Length: 223
Image (cartoon, rainbow, N blue to C red; front, top):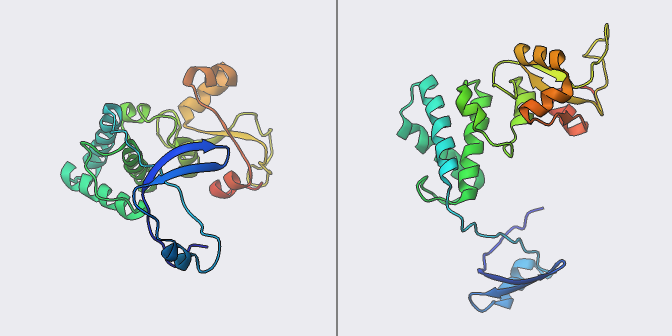
């Protein structure tokens, strides 16, 4: 449950001892105001650490490569598209307006994630070189499984079991809990069977997803 009212207090984190933090506030704390906000209960606080890192050249290059793919497909101008995705990011994550020239690493990751998800959602194709440049820490695997895109090249794909389901079994009726899956196009699925799963994973540096209840729910499978 979110508090009905909230206020911000700024300072620096001085030390950490287990779950106990020492914080030096920039200004004196108004205890009466804190007690009023807490409504007679023990105050609940949220710790947010400001990201002092500046966007990296790799992040900037990836963002504009993705944006170019988007514009080539939709006909938008680059400046128009950049403003639109900044607006979506600011509204979605409640962040202050920012510039791609000097925003933080965290802000850059947010807008890149927004752009990737948008392109998945509306089936906007990625160029192969752009696809290959998306780092593994973006949720590419789950997006590929949900939208049936090949995790290696981004082309239309099927969900492939790491270990075969079995001849003659109806995949729609199989309970998939505990199985490992990937989303692969026909070309890469055929290659997986040809060279074997171990060599395939080592070649493309991918990690199959284990199907738990949440994964099964997201991709519409029985657990």
